[in-house]
Image (cartoon, rainbow, N blue to C red; front, side, top):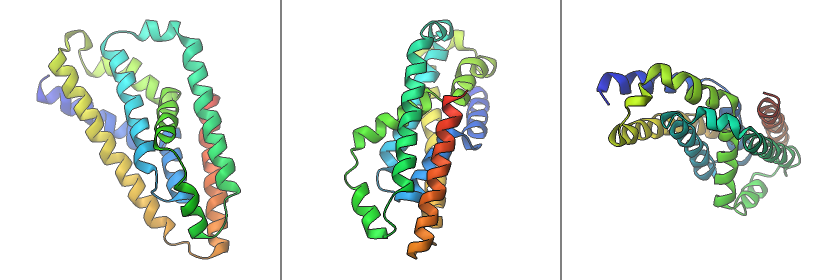
Length: 204
């Protein structure tokens, strides 16, 4: 692909990815409530979900994606259910920082990756961008294998910048809360935020 096309795509993706939505809410809430442990696996799943939607759009499989609506609905509700589970865990988490850290160590990286993937696959905002808006930004019919690789590289780079920025900011904000009372408020607040992200995914 030409450089101008990649820049246009990257800029549009940056704006879409950086604007708050269910995926960003889930990432921020998880870091605020649990710290950065497991954040890499979770955000990797979110990013790979974007690559899946990008691939469907490039291959012109929007119609096929629509025909498998039941499968995507199941993925969407699975992602929403997991976010609700995380919301409950955050709401009921111990207020001691060391207890929270000990609990996050037991979380499976694969499980977190799949959870992040499910969140993206069921996120209507991501679906709209790749299946509806991407063809308006890129000539998907003329994308070569090299062009596709370039789009994937730009996608992963942009998402890495966006997600890392949110993780760092959330981690710094979390360090401001050191008292048991403050930690309890953060856990419950982020639990509510996570539940809101689940509701946004499930109802759209």
